[in-house]
Amino acid sequence: MDNGASSYRRFLEGDDSSFVEIIRDYKDGLILYLNGITCNIHTAEEAAEETFYKLVVKKPKYTPKASFKTWLYTIGRNTALDYMRKNSKKNDVSLYECSSFLKDEVDLERSYIKEERKIILHRALNKLKTEHRQVLWLLYFENFTSKECAGIMAKSAHSIEAIAYRAKMALKKQLESEDFVYEEL
Image 1 (tube, helix red, strand yellow):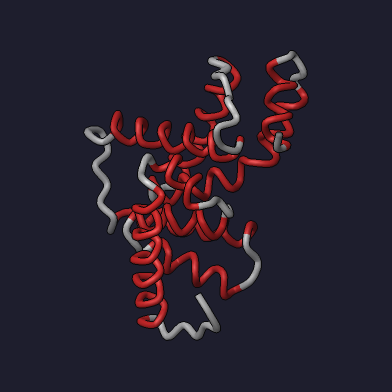
Image 2 (cartoon, helix red, strand yellow; image 1 turned 120 degrees about the vertical axis):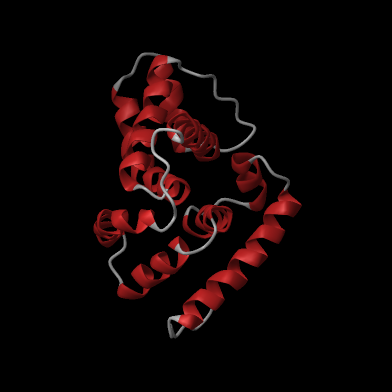
């Protein structure tokens, strides 16, 4: 049983301090992943907060079919998509308007990723299609397997591998257009 699952089990048994461990271990990565879906760091933070709120209030049952992290990110993704559906009529924001949120995103990236090359990589990722950004983030930054990624995104593992290939090609093209020098992708 991974550490998150162990902490969640202890939380369900009444140990409130174990929930603090879950938030500490997964909050930053979850927010950055959800930011890739929402293109808005504030919305991503709200969706992450709502995800943790659901764990506290609804106490959904975790079954170890997948890792705890996979399960948590799936809940987070569904929460973000629900939020976006509910608010799509209120706040229609185009991808071009999302650039106004870039300053907040860059501030978070700089605290989370300290090397300049990684910041350039993240900016290039933000220019990719949402699905490509999600797959690359889950596979390479969160170290999920294709099977776990497929579970989170509700797709087949074969589909995830095909999307990952196309996403890497798109990222490579984007980086080359910005004269980015890389050793390997």
